[in-house]
Amino acid sequence: KYHLNAGGGIKPYIGVGPSVFFYIDEKPGATTRALGGTSLNLENKFGVALQAGVDIPVNDRGLGISIDGKKYFVNTVLHVRNAAGAEVLETKHKLDPWVVSAGISYRF
Image 1 (spheres, rainbow, N blue to C red):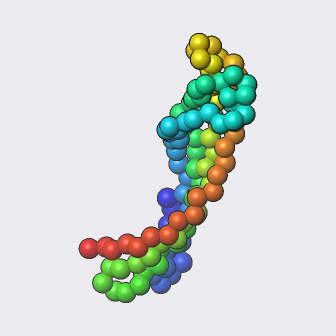
Image 2: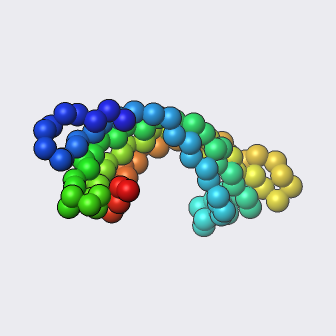
Image 3: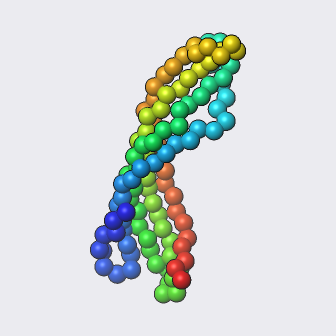
């Protein structure tokens, strides 16, 4: 993260860094089952994230709020297998979700 010098107590920032996506408890849906798939697996992958936000002080005793937006970029592969364990489908996916968050902070 790089905090920009905006003057005053408000601190906007931008950043870039690595990310990792873990896929947990994947279950086949109706379309996957219609293809003969009984199980599926998305590969856990590393990607990159861009972020921008602002830290805003609420008082002079360390209380503040933070608002943040992140854009993730990651590629993964979906593997669908049948009851015998044979792969019946493999598809590649590019994921690029936005995550917007806010929080309360206290500096002591």
